[in-house]
Image 1: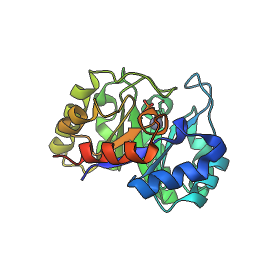
Image 2 (image 1 turned 135 degrees about the horizontal axis):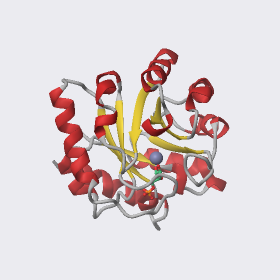
Image 3 (image 1 turned 90 degrees about the horizontal axis):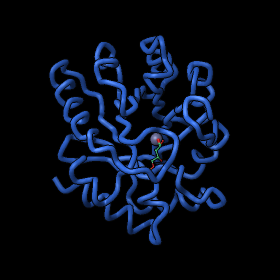
Length: 219
Ligand code: DX5
Ligand code: ZN
């Protein structure tokens, strides 16, 4: 069964607790939290304080996506705030093995993300150490962008890599996921679907969760 992780980036932050409860009640599996620093990506969002607030609103795992430079400096803060999975970007970590080890030592699941222009070969040597591989299907920084079609090939390659090295990481895909794009992404082998605007920027948030869940569990 594939999982759905609504991204609160597109939610109404003046009503965050209600929005998180609504997606939880409608069948969401994880809550995806996009942390941006204005350096690695052009946008700035939020830090551990908001993660801590989100934690109080839900029993679902918090899936924290760090789009920040020097993430090592803040891993403990994000773990203490209630992150269940902490995902760092390959592009921000010169000592990726050390960073992954630190996340696991803290007690969180360790994820690594790759930008659309970053080949999977850059994470191959540490792929059997990670819990999650996050494939960016847009350039990180903003919600509401279009799915980059070449990401389908990358998802298929990630499935092959996982088989070849006998690893067990989940494959998560993030960016441009909606009711029109999700079936192909499912067929390519995605395990965890992140969706922001196709859930929170719709007239009926609950119905959008139900509809996406139906598509991603249609195999
Ligand atoms: C983009 C973020 C995404 C974003 C996806 O940098 O990592 O998680 O919320 O938004 P949509 O689903 O609107 O493309
Ligand atoms: Zn994200």
